[in-house]
Image (tube, rainbow, N blue to C red; front, side, top):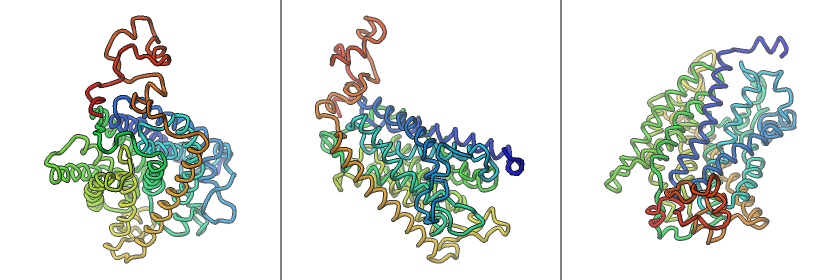
Length: 464
């Protein structure tokens, strides 16, 4: 690394960025368990596979061209998509991003690129071909995520104006860690795919209860833990901005979890473990764009609003007639949009300007003397990402459905996607599979015979 670049390096910042990258990667297995517990027992392995396959696909694409499309300088400074200056992670070994090596920054952003398409899997649980999902992830990440990441996360040369992403640098919309680029983007894509793929057999008349609520809580806990890397790590340094993002993440999540279970108690007379977990995730989603714009009291307000709002939104899907299996739209689209828009009301210059020489001169929301200016910018960001993601995803889904068919057969859906697609089941309660030696369960499944054993929790399956 050149001497002038080495002078910029800070080992503490680099260590925090690498640790944050690992925390964000953990979020995708956490998401797999969160979603997996919410599915029926005959679909849990497929959900886990969809998420782990996303890690593999996006990691390879990111190195080949994804990082370049998201974070290389674009031709003409239009701000819509990056160029090819970093294809194959070219020159990232000898350059810096702030006070860390650029390769560390590329690693951190890779984890964002992984979890965004993984979030979509929850909207189409139980019914999509594994090969179709893999093709969708590769195309969607290329056509939708990489450009939107460029809009939101790429600031260009900070000494030059308007040479970065369209929303971040040209418009001035604030999204610290991805409320629009990640959550709203994935939520609107989930809505489009749910419409393209169609409803599950029996929905909404038949109950389709979560098969393993402890899995849901485990996944929510892993997400909560990893989210500190997601939000505080986005400061790209171990500094005051990371500290305020860390605290805001904690208190907003706690407030949202409480708000959700209070809403359940008011509306249904019961507070549920599933509601507590879902409320926590709603709070994490909503504070993501705002964690470096609001103070801790503002973060509590964001969490309370998000927990209540997302709780109501999740209950609306049956009224609108779309089968968003695991509430991706109600939690991620609504929560991401709410958090981004609340910046326009609650952003305080003492937080947004924390890194400026004269602290307190950053952008301000309506309630802190900023007028409607920042709120207008936030609205532009929300509308642009929502429309772009929904339209492009709907087109991608329709084309893939025509070419290869996205949905499994009715028979496979009824018997369970785990055995039909992966030749495995998550739960074995008998001994006949092991009596013939290792691997006999898979061989029996491949022959279409599960040896008389249930594919999962028979009580849950009977209900579902």
